[in-house]
Length: 360
Image 1 (spheres, rainbow, N blue to C red):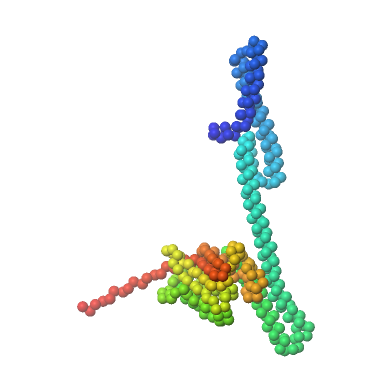
Image 2 (image 1 turned 180 degrees about the vertical axis):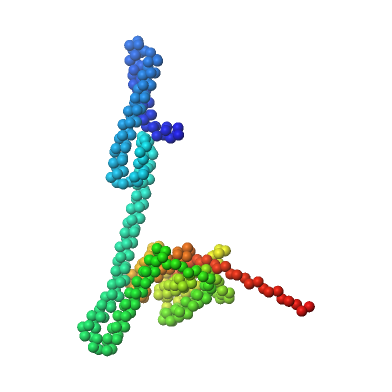
């Protein structure tokens, strides 16, 4: 407490001491010159002067700081209302300066964060608008053409209706993915965790994507032959979606005659890590931090021609985070990319062997 008081009133104490020293010295010289010097009177005068000087300085400076600085706080809202308590305001300018600097830094960080969010919001709205209006305009164009008379031609009618149907399917696909991400973000999508063999699940995804891989002549393979199942505890349907999205991404952006390799490795005692590695074109480093944003595309033009909602990696990230797991990405231009995520191992119950009875 003594240290706090000494620090709080340091300015007033020092100023009072200097004022008292000067005036007492002058008074002593005058009394000494007039032959009326009295040490006791000088000491008493010094004490009274010190008390008066300290009181006046402290009260005036407190009033100045409270009135002026509080007005600044109120105007720029630098401090929370709880920061200006009704207790005594001291003249410790160092503490006040540190407090202002701290809040200024906090506000700067807050402003920078808001700017980043605003840029993200603009990008997001622009991307949503583009992704939705493309199929909408496509559907609208085909329907208007049909209404203008093309429906009378059966071959044209069928072709245009099929194309319009594909546009509607794309819209539904985007809306469903957006709905899924929203539910994952707000925690409304309950995970149904169960024990399953991750190797079997990955193989089933390989089989489902067989036609896609044949078009680009890309091979989906494991890094080794897994003779034994590897059981994990997670939402099987959602993890299948994760694996599918990552493999579709590797096919979409991979080179023809390329390879995508999947490995499952023990990470720690109760974790495994699933790696999806391709030898595609790779991703520039500046794009990696934003890969998991909604609708973010590295190639703004070509990637849209490949189809998809632009939400695949964002969904992957949210599903993995909903499992309270981690997802990682590494990439090098001209070499390829690797996406990896962790999963919880399932506890495997070992059946006890029945004792073999001997005839002897």
